[in-house]
Amino acid sequence: MDVQNRRVSATRLHSMIGPLAEEGPAYASLARGIRRLVANGRMLHGTVLPSERELVTELGLSRTTVSRAYSELRDRGFATARQGSGTVITVPGGPASGGQEPMPDGAIELDAAGRHAVDLTCAAPSAPVGMVEHYEAAMAQLPAYISGMGYFPLGLPELRSEIARMYRQRGLETSPEQIVVTNGALAGFAAVIRAVLPPGSRVLAESPSYPNTIASLRHHGARVSAVPIGPDGTDLEAVGQALRRIQPAAMLCLPDFHNPTGTLLDNEGRERWARQLDAAKTVGIVDETAVDLWWDREPDVKPMAVYSDRIVSIGSASKSHWGGLRLGWIRCPRSLQGAVTSMRTSLDLGAPVLEQLVLTRMLQTGNGLPDESRKRIRAERDWLHATLSDQLPGWKANLPAGGLSLWWNLPAPRSTVLAEAAARHGVLLAPGSVFAVEDHGLEHWIRTPFALPHEELERAVPGIVAAWHEVA
Ligand SMILES: Cc1ncc(COP(=O)(O)O)c(C=O)c1O
Image 1 (cartoon, rainbow, N blue to C red):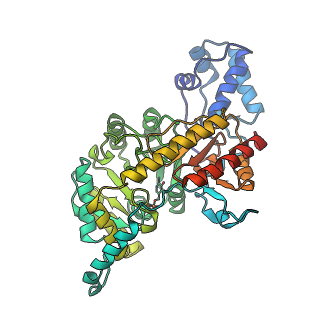
Image 2 (cartoon, rainbow, N blue to C red):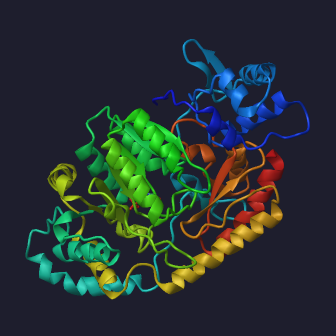
């Protein structure tokens, strides 16, 4: 993985660390503040620290204090002195790339009581009530299609129209020709990156991020650089700096209930992000998989493509309807329509007709998640947040307005050993490092999906709590 020499200014470092603790020597507080940023994934492997002189001026400390803090970071493996660059952040143990989101093989094993492990590695809801009836109705429509060849490489025309209508409803003028139906968002993403990125291109992504899209970029030979984000959302200042420094061909954006942090970007932020992409001549690939997953109130936000015609949007029916449909779509800006559609047909020749009929019907009879599912998932979110906060008081997570997971900040960097211990207690968890884009600095974080049946969540909690007490 490509490790960039990103630079953090003295002012920015100061604002990221906040006020230094008053007790104990100042050098120790400064070194501790920087170590925390590394452990929290806010400062990535390869970041160049400000020169000692710049930091002395910014913090009003003595030169000896700053030198001693930097020297302590080097001694503990958190920094290295690099000739010509100055002091550069290192993650102890070296950078390790985030893996793919684990597949739930372990869930197949049974415990002593004959029960499957509770699988919290995958964040997806089950099918809504009425799914079978939608399939039955689609079956009744199928004979009309049987006499044809059954190939719809860009999607069934009626489904493309429905998806275009959804975008228009969200305030984005879209014609059915701009829509390409795919076998899920990930397949759509694979087609888009092949269409817009020559191998070896630079791509920017937020870290943490959804691991399978990062893996897809890597397999395509893209050089992925990360920009850190916090639990409070996309840091547009950091994005702007990274776009100017790296000049990537594309940036992966998750403004709608980011996976795993659950954050939502407002319209002002979307517009600013789109303008920054335009200024850098960078294509924005917007993953809208979670757009419909709001729990409290429908957010008043527009698709990012409203603000720039350099943005490709990728949607999915997996979370709003059902993962088993294996359907998603691409909304292309007109300038990229030709490139994306021809790439689509070089990968595969379309999605199954029956599932497309099912989804068309579901979109015609109601938009997305039924109220009943929304209410149930909201209650599970609240329950899991309250229960784990109560039983593990050191764990902190925002209550996300949407998305499918809680993103917990752990009081100690034990995410990987916690996941290993939890597996022994019958709970499968994806550790924070799985979501890291280019280093394993996310050991302070763990994701817990909440859209599972309540009995499963109830069964998971004691396992997680026991595992944490074992490793903390
Ligand atoms: C952010 C994100 N993007 C893409 C996907 C893949 O979606 P699909 O099932 O439509 O391929 C997921 C699934 O979890 C996801 O969370």
